[in-house]
Amino acid sequence: MPVLVLCFAVLLVIGVLLSEIAHRTILSSTVIFLVGGFVLGPGVLDVLHVQQGDAAVSVLAELALFSVLYSDGMKAGLGELRRAWRLPGRALLLGLPITLLLTAFVAHWLVGLPWLEAFLLGAVLSPTDPVFAAAIVGRGEVPARLRHLLNVESGLNDGLALPIVLLLLSAAGAQGSGGWQLAEELLLGVAIGIVVPSVVILLERVPLLAATESLQPLLPAATGLVVLGLCLTTQANLFLAAFTAGATVASLSPRFKKEFERVGELVAEQLKLVGILVFGALLTPTFLFRDVGWEGWLFAVLALVVARPAALYLSFLGSRFPLKEQVAAMWFGPKGFASVVYGLLVLSAGIPEGDHLFHLVGATIALSVVAHSSTDVVVAGQFADSEAKS
Image (tube, rainbow, N blue to C red):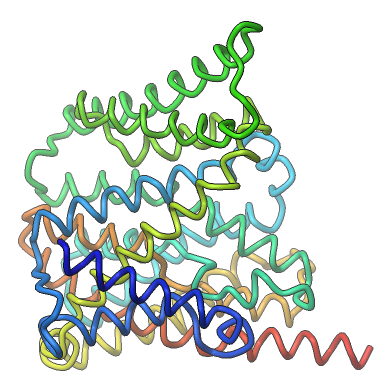
């Protein structure tokens, strides 16, 4: 653990110092941590001693995903959902399930996975993450409609895919996840995610109870920690609780949401980068160049260039969405941090095809990070050129 902390700290300093250059080039903080983990991991320099199945890896991944889902839930308030219904709604309600189905079909047809495991793989790889395409989401020359679509879609699809992943894991025979037990864990997680923030927000409105301005950002963060602690104590599903809690905060108190953005998203981003670093260390040369196999790499390519684009093309039919923006949205479906952690959940679940699924997830995410992080600036520049010509 001390070595992991040191490696993370050094890479974080490097990433921050290079962030201005990264904003103008194909470099990104995600690539720095993924490549850093690969180079420092067991297969190259052997500085980070990380192995599949390590308890520390699972704990870090769970904490990181909890914080990410809590932040993502903040984008799922009732107000945000009303404003985001049209194009993001198509991408979420049509694009996500179609992506899942097409990915499962490719996995079954090409790799030979049984249908249940193929659907599980599709669910794991259906969420997207705008961090891997920061130049698209964060640049003013990119049309606001496209930036909004990708941002809202990626903020919500982690939470929408989660119940599907858990249910399919249970059906595949995951250890300790029987049907009724899983249902109880999910329902308890939703209940905690609704009740805890609601109580805290009501208490904060009591005249005698008020936080000073300097400490106000800590209140939504502390609320998240209470949710986390209760879930760990009661065995409630902490991921669904995190997303529900974030959505409850955003719905009941937009001010809480704004306060959380000042500190919470930075914390979530750091935990996400820790997870990417550990994931990179698991991608040893043996993992990538021997264990995955040519079928695995071909699957990864088809998942990126066929499944996602075809799903969004079908979702946008009849929408009058400009073709150029539509193509950009179809391409920028980067496989994000949620897929990393869902893959680790599959690996630790003890299902027969777990190791094979994790190899396919790892290959797809690695290829996605390289492909999307190296093309976001180029595509953003195309929009800038079009704007200049007009």
